[in-house]
Length: 101
Image 1 (cartoon, helix red, strand yellow):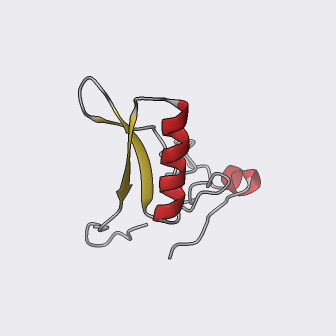
Image 2 (cartoon, one colour):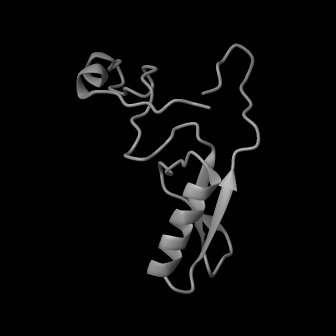
């Protein structure tokens, strides 16, 4: 199972490249409280008009199915009638010579 990653502001500032991007510099993303980057479970809202899955720019990743289900229950209680789905990562693929996160 993947470890939580949290990068200090100091580490980020030392890792800036010419494009001013700490992510592009290879510094792992900062996790939110309770998040497990690499945990493999996500909760998304389905758009009622289009049926498509709505996503955020940086979706929250849960460590296990129970945590994702608990969050979906909380969100559905806050937004009656809205449909929330739980997705699990089933595979990670990376181009040759690149390391999958």
